[in-house]
Length: 279
Image 1 (cartoon, one colour):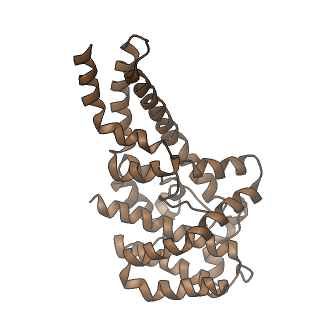
Image 2 (image 1 turned 90 degrees about the vertical axis):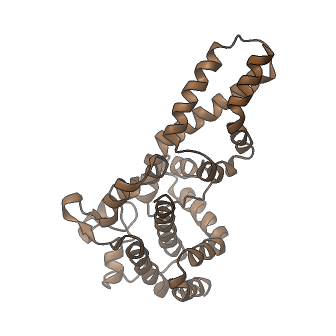
Image 3 (image 1 turned 45 degrees about the vertical axis):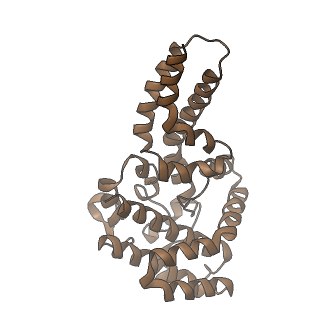
């Protein structure tokens, strides 16, 4: 039995970091992205370990306790992979996008409030999150996109000065610009033969790995920020890039709308940066 336990311990050694991820939960995603294989591959490995778990006789043993922890982690990751795309789309249809750096259960928290028709609560969660992380987000954007530092500095200054009417159109322009830097395509240019979705949607679908594909649902479906002007009535959020840049909307200048467009900019930057790292 000692040899068997040693063999199991050697097999589980690569996953010790995963146990530490569970306490606290907010660190799980960072380590998941940096230290783990894509979730689908992880699930295949987990299924193999689960067979071993099921075959071990149920007696008091520290090893069994570790396997039970690993079993719970696997179930959580499986649920995350299955439900997160739906959560992210629901959130995007309400005007928000979630950066890849957020804690793992944040999309479900926000989506839960929307599903229960507590949209104000969902907005408060998003406002608090992006307000608290705004300086870090700008620092990351400047580091990733050095050619745009001066523009990003001006956007950040406008945010601090609450000059939202000027800031919001500039952020939307940078969404197009960052996409063009990475793909030579613009975010708000649509593909007619792909349900009028952004040009980069098909590009990301082709190149994204299993883990990154979890986050693509807001780009694979229509959301209010990107739809044609006549279609925005279909969504609870009316913030629309076309109406802003063409002067139709004149009442968009608010804190919540400024954070919504920043959330989009960070989300797009996250996706393209991760894609660039893996290719």
